[in-house]
Image 1 (cartoon, rainbow, N blue to C red):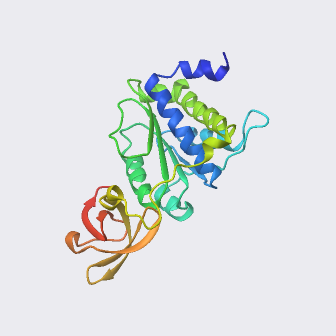
Image 2: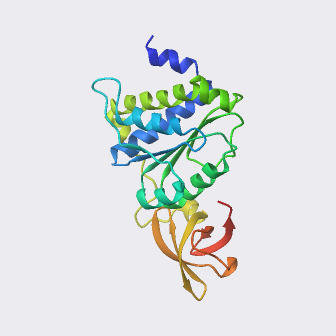
Image 3: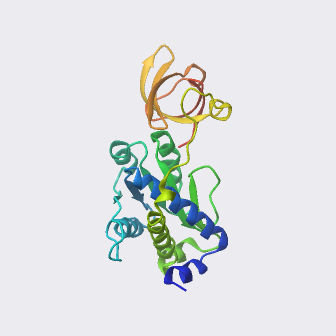
Length: 240
């Protein structure tokens, strides 16, 4: 039995499955050229640690993967400037960290793939593509005891395992071309307002792409607001 096998056994079954799915997604995004932006507002040392874990592998022969810790007075503004569509956002926090929850929601509009690691009561679904959680654990104790370190160390190890199997790095083909996907065409999207054009029109970014939409139904809107958009029309204002 390998050290990784032993570590995985220390993680609950649900978290282990979530780790595997997140690692697959991370490896595919890294292979496509993504950078991973790490944020840990409550426990900044964890943000630094997880970034270093990915950038400077402790095992000879493992891939160095681009990861950057982001902290400071305005993490949202920094990421808005630095992150590119297709990049990764890895957040480490408790579910009570409303600032991180808001950042994760905003990152959807920027076109980032989001991974949320934490402990305690599990956050509501939908804030990240991958939520890897130590449910039932005390968040503060987990941050101090090394349980969270184990979680993102396993994420790093499993991501490296995916790279050892190149066939897994091929992303599943989604909707593309001239075909119209009924599911996607009926899906609301999160958009961030970038400019007000007047006459009920605003410039927004949604899934990392720029577009103009009708905001008549939700006026007044301001730059930075998050909107739920469907078919070029803003239907609601979202809390960030």
